[in-house]
Length: 195
Length: 220
Image (cartoon, rainbow over all chains, first blue to last red; front, side):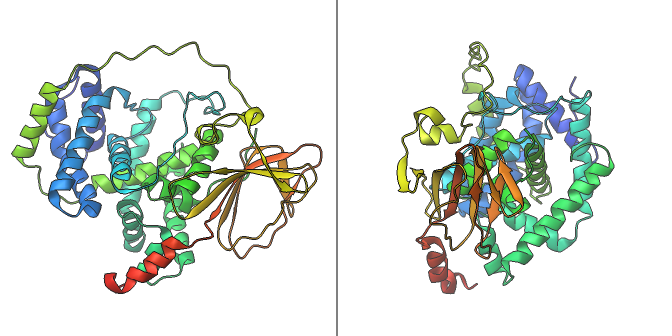
């Protein structure tokens, strides 16, 4: 059952996953309102990075959230956090809106697709646990690495462009991203899963 | 199949962020189809995107915005019943994986190769980005990759057969990530032709030219 209370900072993520499952299972409007009030302003800020004017950002946010509503039954809490799933939906809509080219994806139903090794036993718990650990590990990254990750994820720039605009060699941008990645992976590894 | 040569972190981050050009993305996505280990790393990269979204500082959503959404979902038609999938297709371990197969319009045995001379052949693959050049290459067994000069980055993903580059062996699913500084002579392993996807910086550097042109305007 989904508890209908405002999520607090601590339990925000597991709760968001449960809300999303409720929307997927039975089109729970109350659960969706909580999700909307939490994620809509964040998605709008993400869109505004490229959209500029706020009407276009508002429309792209509405497109994202209606997709969340329509596709919520495909959200799998064993695969990751609600914020991650919503990020990928927003990202795909942003690519469609602002890029001339496509972002090709693999197809898990393709006969040539190589499936994962045997799934671990307690997947849902593990995936949500990993997202909590990732949240904690992100807080330990140096500011310069977080700033770089934000540039890499929120602006539609190549790493060469980021390097030029920060007046930094491309190698430095790549190695800082790599350091951030290594550190986050190590934090998750220490707790078991994710290689 | 054990993949030894994986995606670099910077490619994974750009792909996860949605900022990677289509040509590079095609090589990345096709490697991901063959590599569960890199899919796990992609999940981490997308998790970072989710965390950054979560951590964005915002003012609360306005009631008018929610009211607009509430009206939309009230009108939204019932969720379409999932069409049952047909019988599961038999796994095929040697074909071209998606998304590549759709880009070339068929599997390995139906491809129409164009000769590059000396037994090697290629198929150009069209993308909508202006920064990459994408092609499938077929290198005859035991022969080196022909006319091999590239000014920038080059991604080579093996789909069939294998090639050696120095002491490194690249087989199906392995991806080689070479930059301009690397002088190399990849050579197909004797016994079997090597088919690979090669993505290079486009010869026309429109993008960097464009960036250079607008730099004074952007003040960077």
